Length: 339
Ligand code: TXA
Ligand code: MG
Image 1 (cartoon, rainbow, N blue to C red):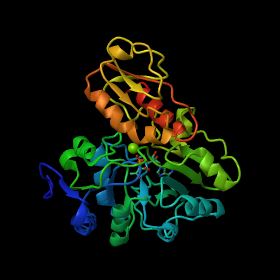
Image 2: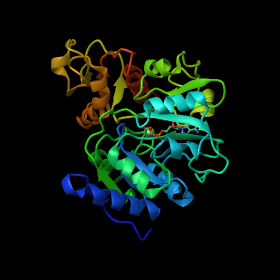
Image 3: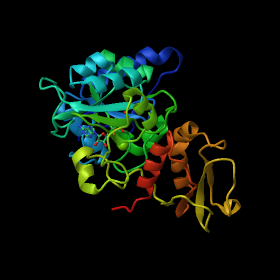
């Protein structure tokens, strides 16, 4: 048992006068090799000093995550990112357009980068991201080292979008939780690989495919990743994209046109559907059909419906455009066969 073990994480608020103290406490804990849950615009991350292999091992242990699955390293700006990864013209253009923001770039790892092999799962590429949350960027600048951070949930479960979700998921496995309120984007970053001639979408997320293609000035190259990929391609390109993920306790039924007996409802848009009055519980992603609002509400709504005790969650159809591609990806994984 570690000397740091305690029954509950230290929860630090960023309210009012406490912001500087919160940043200092997070920097100190990370510098001491401890795990710190950090707010980002997408979801809360479970952070550790990416250059400290022992600290990174703690992330895999806390999440129960297979260590073949590489982690994203978070840095305060593009200049810091370029010390760890090699950016070609496309990667630099994307970074300049979307950082800080919900985009992760997978690029060749710089040979001299101190990011631990455990964080990159031994690959010769590295996933880098500059998150938009101001507190977390100050922590990254203060630490002066990259922070490896997957979503702060147990492996395979729903990603946390509030500090309370983090505590519910990980409890005392995390030393410090920095509470900066709910995450405004609500789905994880879009992951784009720039590893040669192709620019590929490895995971849809908070920046839409159309926004990325507008900056590139051409369509993304066909990607074997995503929900239409076969498993061997996923292992090759984005080892983390395991088919079952984001899984609530309840079964998930997609593109539902009616609510069946015993089901809870995840609603979208203004039109009610048959059986809605009989639903065990109802959560609405967006009453107006706004996909940005729906993304921000997705994981919290899934968590609340799951705690209703319903055996299954019926999900109304969600269009695939804009952030809808990321929402549909997460829901497809939540609905995938477990085990
Ligand atoms: O929004 C986000 O990206 C959040 C916040 C905390 O930043 N993080 C996040 O991390 O979603 P995680 O670990 O849940 O997902 C990271 C994904 C995994 O699917 C992993 O396989 C992929 O990034 N990844 C990381 N490095 C990679 C690499 N070198 N090559 C291919 N895929 C990589
Ligand atoms: Mg995750």
